[in-house]
Amino acid sequence: MDDRPTDGTRDQNSADVVELTGRLLCADLTEASTVRQHLPEHIALTRAEPGCFRFEVEPTEDPLVWTVVEQFVDRAAFDAHQARVRTSRWLEATAGIARDYVISTRDSLDEVSAVAPSPMLRRLRASDAPAVHAAFGSADDMARQGDVTTLAEAERYVARLLAEDSPHEPWAIAEGEELIGLIAVTVDEENLSGWFWYWVTHRARGRGLTARAAATVAQWALTERGLERLELGHRVNNPASGAVARAAGFAKEGTERGKFLIDGQRFDVDTYGRLRTDPAPAFDSLPLRAGE
Ligand SMILES: CC(C)(COP(=O)(O)OP(=O)(O)OC[C@H]1O[C@@H](n2cnc3c(N)ncnc32)[C@H](O)[C@@H]1OP(=O)(O)O)[C@@H](O)C(=O)NCCC(=O)NCCS
Image (cartoon, rainbow, N blue to C red; front, side, top):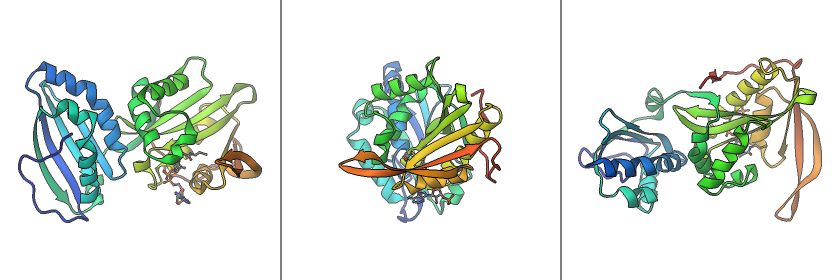
């Protein structure tokens, strides 16, 4: 959004969390249709910003009005968001639409987290494509997770995972309705085994969320889903991935030397496995909602 306040701005300490609340007020159904058309991309791109903690734009009973709640980790993150939006397709399309916003600050993220939606796991959906697109654009290391540089490619990526004959069983890590990461098992039915893989959008990293989500899905795969072995591999220069694997109960099984050639350099890959009979790790599970 163009987040210029109409009133209520007060002096803000740069270390404080910045919160914007208010309403987006369309004059007619044409403006409302423009909002509906551009909002998914705007939400996905904003949530992928490293300093965005919360970004909710919700329809109301009035078809011309949306409520808006935004929280950024500090003033610099909020200003960076404003700067991005100034040249965005969203603002180009909606600049003429009225906003009624108030910007305030809070002392800490602890206070904010009390009102943020709790993370959970749910099935991937076709409507997650804009969030997938944003996640792939959020960090350079996403390039090796698949070819997704446009929304159309994100739609194809999601469609492939959801295809009826797909061996992939993808779980979205979601906050509220929004996908922020993916944990997937690519199933080999013949051997009752699964290749385990994961990625998370940049802003959601470093919170221990992937470790919890991976442990939850691994537990599901080896119990309810009936698999007997899970396996994965990560490049040795991706230690966070190995830490996620260990947190999810995987044991290191070996190293494939010089497996990948990337930018002229060969990289070793560490391989991990977890058997149904291995001891389950202690972990703080996420709710896993198969029906959602
Ligand atoms: C790998 C990835 C999923 C990690 O996600 P994350 O949300 O930051 O992970 P978590 O916050 O759950 O942290 C899990 C562990 O990794 C550790 N970790 C995180 N970043 C790290 C880093 N740069 N170096 C070393 N360890 C790191 C954490 O300390 C934590 O370990 P702990 O439980 O022992 O404290 C994420 O960086 C990502 O999506 N990368 C791109 C895709 C990718 O590489 N996927 C894996 C392909 S094999």
